[in-house]
Length: 100
Image (cartoon, rainbow, N blue to C red):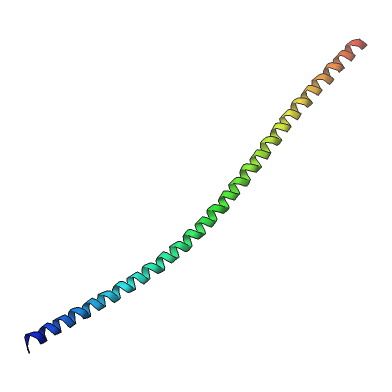
């Protein structure tokens, strides 16, 4: 076997090894691309859920504002009723005093 033939065999083996390594790289790249696609899908779902949660939070804020307004009205109504009761009680006391 000549030196050139030996060099050719060595180069062919090296090329074969490089092709195998390249194939491994392609396989790993495909696996990573598949994982990346799944992560993108999961992220999209999380974004959608976050958007829904923002809508729910906005509705809860709105409902809380309505409850605050209603509570304020009820508080005012309670004070008005209390004032009316005091006035009626005062009128009754005045009328009772007039009868005495």
